[in-house]
Length: 381
Image (cartoon, rainbow, N blue to C red; front, side, top):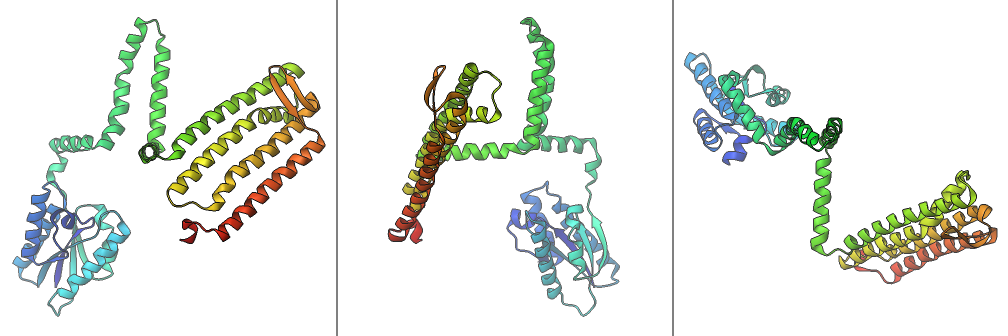
């Protein structure tokens, strides 16, 4: 017995018509083909189904052997899962055939993607041949125009192709306009080249999804009234101020003691000027996060460790940087230019390290005890 098997790997038939698969029998396959053609006349799987009916009638007209036609589908999205589903539907078709003869198959597909399932079918029934359906009009200029029109109608493809092309076409008008304002043409070409380079990197690295996700998260934070939205903005401002303050401290030390400073002194100057602002930024952002976790019912006592850890780390860094600066500034509080530098000696450094360590340890132990004695809703869950 010969089985004409029409394969629709991505289940266009089921998704677009709602028909249950597999479809067995000439009349049922023809009904499925008409239904799919009605739902989507442009779908290539319509041709696969009609080709299967055509092969069925050819073989049946010869009256040399028994023949049957069937259509099997997979699922959309995953080739591995689609192949497995096709295999299950082939098993269903073979079990439904009323014949005592050995069954062989002719597989009808519309392209190489559907033919990836051939090993799955071959493991269940011998394959006599494979027919790939190609529409004749696809070789004509009219079809090429139609295909380009369909491709450019897709938003993603349109953005990928037309945006760089539009920028290239604007080069000459930009140069002309720039010449009217006495702007060198090389400057315009450089700017346009930079835009094209950034756009190419943006598309090539797939950053559009990252930007979209970031914008979506920011919008959700704004509409949900999250405290972190404000605290993160404040923390970013504090970080910027801290960075500038660190540079100002370094510049003041260089002006007072010469530019040829040791690398350790340069790093200590930057840290000493910035660490206080950085600490406030860390405390601000952590308190905002703790507030949101509390409002969302996910609060845990251990979350309160974050501000104490930030203070402990800042205290240690401030003391260490002050210790290194003491070699050039001296011990104690000193005005270096317009900046006040507070340095410490060995004893002060030891005290700061001890206090920072104890602060971190005590906060950890205290909140661990609080968790064990007064569990929150999140910890109980």
